[in-house]
Image (cartoon, rainbow, N blue to C red; front, side, top):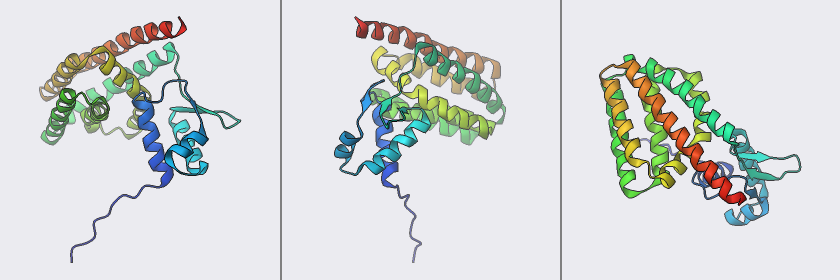
Length: 226
């Protein structure tokens, strides 16, 4: 008899957390939007208890802000905070990438290649949510050989904050082609062992996203005020 294959079981708060996270990252729940626990309980057809637990988890991730009176809203970052998120990405990711390149194997390159192929399919399908997830996995795969667990833990939290802005940048500003070109070139430089050139390109890649995104957010917020 074959062994029963284990299937990961998720608790109700975990399922709700994952769904709410995606709703925030996709922009369905906008920055600063008030979150009403009773409305969410109705949406998910559950009591308020798993809703409260899910919101606590998202608060810990920095995607939701809880107040003492149990009110909640989607976290809204200032322009300087958005800039800081991307500055942190440069600091952490460039260091990880430069450390990883000399240690990367054919298996690492193959994994990155497969993720790139999947990303390009998501470009063609205009599936921004899928692209966002694959973008994170691709960058993670580029840095995996660095074997820096603590740095990666910090980067995971930073990337969670940047993900919705990256998706916004891609969907609103039609930046698929430049992103696709950069991603292919990053892998090519890594294969060639060109550490410094790879670090420079990654810096420019993240910096360009930051600059274009900040300009877009400034324009959007001025429009909201007006």
